[in-house]
Image 1 (cartoon, chains in turn brown, cyan):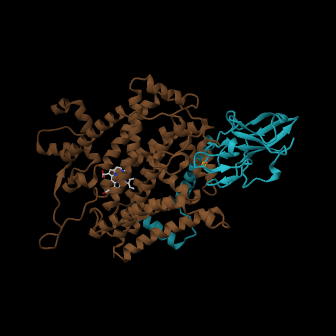
Image 2: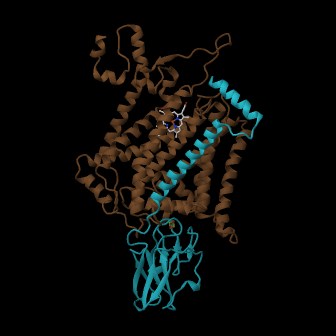
Image 3: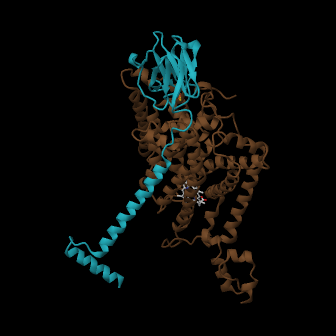
Length: 455
Length: 173
Ligand code: HEM
Ligand code: FES
């Protein structure tokens, strides 16, 4: 009983039972370790492969933690009022010790988080990580992605510079095209008809309290569910020589094998992020000026794919299309019930081909369509007697959906892909298309949103 | 024990489905009360956060000035009121909300081209706020104008949507 006292205080924080120098007690000590509330005691060796998960979920979690820490620091110095917000940021940039660095880490972590969560979604999709009872976690994941985007969007307004003001104005105006409640939702969010003091207050409260609370809850649920679903997805092990049973998979203990890897990734990420943040400070433009939007006025970079759509379609159509895509992504687990290919990147050789074909078509088609629409096609002029909601909304929307359906069915019929493989092709097309639209929006749109070449 | 009771209860229920057992009564009662509580708390929070739109200078009645100080064919910007006061050739007033009907950027008056231009997605509107060039789907919104004792008053609290410009929107001194 003496070692009960001698166990150091820090050890007691991590272990619930006292350590004892015999094997049984050591086992118990390991089993009661805090780390093992998050992870199972053993994990399949293959699941530890860097090239399977790319560590993207863990990196996202770490970024979320960094955002929490730097965010709380920022709260001590930030002032959520129209008169003082901008100056409080300026003060932070110039006078506060490490103010610029803390803000910069917060800024870059937030932007990186969007990228890593998006890539994590891609990796889960391409390895079929939503299969075998993982549909619920796929849905939780999508909600997490939306929460991350919402956090970025609400945080965007807080510096109250030109970028903030106009990106949020354009972003919330989209809502007013939602038939029925859209106008009142936007009115509610902004606490009035346009972005002002009420909007800044609302966004601040949502950004620092509502969304972080939801994120913490859902992230905990997400991790717990990964364990309850039997750990991360893995291919079914091959059959034994007699063909009667599955071979046993090699399992490694979480401590040290998984924890060590996590530690290395964490240290590397923090180092790179800190260096980057030191050399590239977070941007701050001129003070917001409600009478003079900058030209071009662009939304935040991760919305520029959507903004690009807006240039080609009626706003209602440009909202319905991503809505349909998002719902389809939510429903993927119910469409693709093939379970044999779980844990294999791109499902199969055919799946790989479909992914390449989808990406190829998107790369060829999307820029071409953007150019055509910019210089030649003009639906409202072609169909002058129709309301623009139809000629510039319904028509391009239906054409796009027909195109997507065509790609899927031709993969099913021509390439004889099964549902799962054809879905890989269609998904690749949509994702590459979306990324290309975003790139066009970021780099190829200049003053008056005209197409330009970035030199 | 518990299971037995439940079975008994289920059997009873089958035999007479009009009867409301104590168990069901409690379930129904607790369910209803919880739903009510959620509604109340949710409703109270919504009211708590209700738009506080009438804070500050924008959203009140603005005194633009004496009517005769605006020559026919002129466009004057009121940045704090967020509007342009337009006076047509025949002397009618129109207060145009500066908010582009596409996605809410502010339009600027380009006198040389006699148009309102929106830099965000290049919509333009003519002198009366009618769409000249999409993507804007409809004419600029207006604010009600009244003329009292020769003073032009603009009520920036109530924007009015319209599809196109019509003559009867003009207000005369
Ligand atoms: C804040 C955002 C998120 C965090 C912190 C997070 C974290 C994680 C972590 C740590 C894992 C364990 C495996 C790995 O590291 O790859 C995981 C697995 C998983 N995630 Fe996420 N995730 C997030 C968002 C998403 C999104 C956007 C999706 C997809 C819509 C998603 C769906 C899943 C699924 C289905 C699994 C199980 C995958 C498998 O079994 O192969 N998560 N997540
Ligand atoms: S906001 Fe004016 S053209 Fe888009």
